[in-house]
Length: 256
Image (cartoon, rainbow, N blue to C red; front, side, top):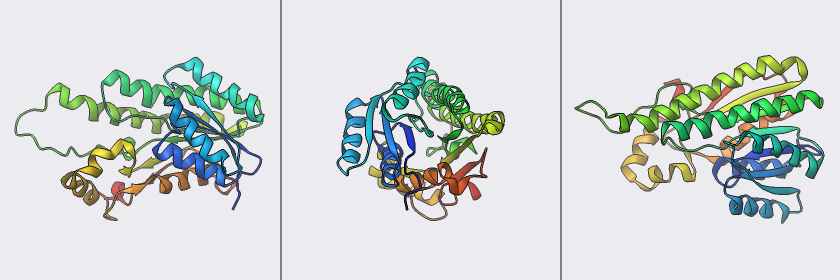
């Protein structure tokens, strides 16, 4: 199945995890892919892997917290491959300080939406897929239990992540409505806990892994390839009447 033949995709956060799986999936289905990431070497490695299979890829160092750099990434993609048909705002980090988490996970997506939707509207339409999270649909259950009040420091990471991902869900719906009449679809995937470098600590700790596996009715963590498959579907013509949707890909986590 080659749903993306002669189409061009820009994937942020492409060096590892979901972004890497997505870049490879899109290339396998015929797309030319710009692999963008703050990790320049990682982006090059993914692009080389794709190009080694006689497909088109271009590595790009990109800091999504830099609005001008995000805008330029669209122009660079156009320079290399002629246009931008699909944009995947996937770059993200785990919950850290409030300012950093919001800057990467929310502002970075906003910059991509702002400039990506405008570019596509001027050029005949396109598709944007954001990586949200189940943390954008509901509150996350802390692993630890506290007999005393949680400290502000303990709150910051999980709260900033949940706030940012709820924001991504809201931006997805808002931009879908604002640009639908100009031929731009905007959707999001909302992954559960996925086996990626971001969750390595959970994977390496048996107690933590079992705790998180039990949160998913399917009894396991997801894979990056499973998320990439849904994201690719949302960007394809098969999803031509899906707009403004935030799709849980979470093994039933959000259905509990």
